[in-house]
Length: 351
Image (cartoon, rainbow, N blue to C red; front, side, top):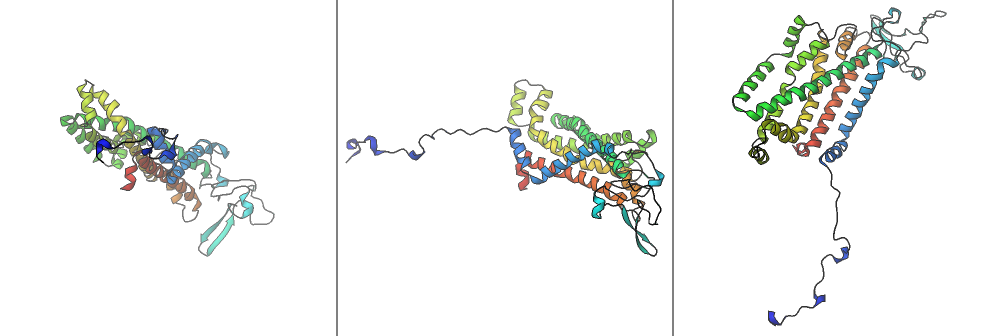
């Protein structure tokens, strides 16, 4: 039988997948770019834990100095060197105000809240210090959260400096290139070559030690890393077709920089700014530790650690809580930054 004699009947063919009748048209809900980022971020357990810790620390920094009944500068000499004591937990044998003292004759356990002599009262039976007191009788709980406020302020300064100066500096340098890029990068290299400690020391000769000096020091060199990341991203994108199309259509340079290039690299810049926060907090803590931080009676976590270090062998609880809070802050920001990096660029997780 040749092709001309072949005859097809309606029932000779059957639609493939006929069992899916009624499902020919399937629609899938579209997800926005930011919804995808949020989904990937929330699936990262470390990032979620870090974000929760940051929120808790911000909450405690806001209300902590107000709930203890003490101020960060109040001194009660009769309450000096008191170990942590928390109402309710003292009945369980923990945080009951007792501490072990190392002496030349051995270890001695004592509780300054309760006198060891029969019939003698100390007047501290109803006194509670959750983190204990320092050598001047100041509440460590209040001073720790007051110092946390300064650390969070430094984190905010680091983000503002990165996003408002380092980002713009890198965008302009990378986009225009040529002599503009050369001059701007030489300026950045000169500033980056000066150690931060030297800059702070010179600023102290002009300004008094305090937050203003530390803020200026961070603003002087803290933006260089961000500018380099922004410049590298611009160099990668500025020759792309959509940039050439915008330039051909007569778009101005500032429009191209902030409307075409910036939205495509904003995710990487956010991640970079998050990673710069722990470094800025550590810098402030280091400067406070060596005596170049905020003046007394103000307290930062670095100055608290510096003061407590002198009594570390006799009263280790004084340094314990500021160190724990500082470690949690730095670790939480690192975890959140790592989660943001994976959320904005999932391919980075495979590298």
